[in-house]
Image (cartoon, rainbow, N blue to C red; front, side):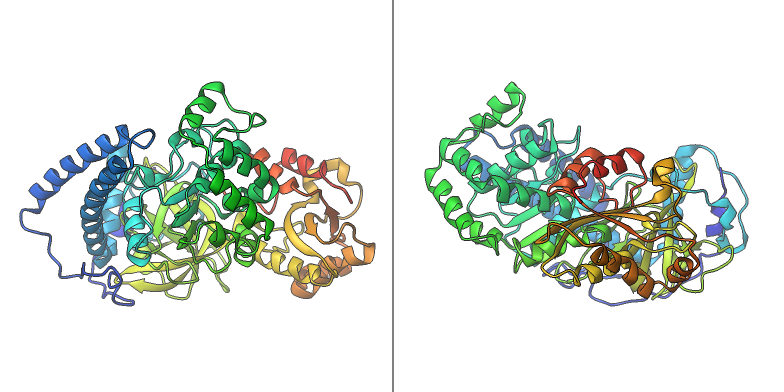
Length: 567
């Protein structure tokens, strides 16, 4: 076990709070500041409140929607909101206190981790810095999400979008094998319009169809929610491809026989459906008008889209904003890495997502990763990061036995008290490099968009890349190069001159890449067109609920996308 305690000791001197005031200002009448003291008899109130909250949540959980009257749903929802409001107030106060002394908060967390591990190894570098050689490559996942996260998220959402927590006012589009409920369901089980059974179906495509069907039954949805923006993109692609079947199921109150579902699941879901010919007619009429702004036309009271939108899925977010979700704000509530929930977005009204790193959620260290970060860098603690600088994250796992580099870079945008507020920048694992040239995914995407703009009538739907070394002997005797697979709309084929435009754009944007190309050390880009829907199938084949990989590292996935090449 590496020793980190000493890295914290010696740093307990007072640090002045930095950053913008009014973090809690937009939370209405609840005003929390550094001098706010806990309420009288807070320990007793906390225990009593937790007991009441647990009882009510268990009661609401066992009586979740499905066959009860609307008055019962509203009563349960009202009770859950009251408990949620109390819990959110406590969590806000607790987070505010933690942000006043980040060093102490991180020390307490680290000591808890070390205590759980029942061991500690002494010895680190001076001032808490640990040498690069002591930081291993990405290893076991860091701690999973904190229960505080959903409570804070729901509270922030309701204060900025007042109707967002209406009963059955949220449609959730997500599927992960063995996981049927979203994180917020334990805190507010009456929030979602689809029943739990909708998440237990055996395939991703069937789950999205069922969730979409239950969402279409509700005329007054306030929120569209998905684990990743690609999942919402796929759900609305189901709407575009099969809206007539959905309308038929709405009108009949039964699920399509072509939908592959276990008989028991089908029976339970159909018990919750009822024929609605009027809503089916509305669906047909709106879809016949086209797809511009379809979300707001189907659900006029929509207020916000809640999705995680990592840099690799920027393409899907842009497509939704331009077409189906025109005029709707997008809100990404959490920042997580390697399975750990690290921060919360307290500013839904801001167009660019930024996250307060919560010092009590995970023990974080940072490796300088911006321009000029050369040589063997030393890790920096949470309280020592500098505004405007870029850092790679290093996390301590739940058992406190190891640290891992998660290969994600963040930039410190500002501070609240002593807590940094960060913006994710890039994923180092998604860098293209066949000769050490290092082309980051976000800059490759810009070069690809530049090339697509020179193909008349073409619109980029999706793409992935791979390094030729992944092909092995099948790549031939040519120099190492990039394999690029794209799905286009409006163009069915490309000439060799058009394909070469991408290589030219990369040479213009990356001088190091151009140097290797002129020497012949790197071969020209090989560009392939794939069939429509190939990338949706690729995401299903990947089997991971994580963000879309733009640089493929698995041979099976590369072979899969190769099998969908049409040109």
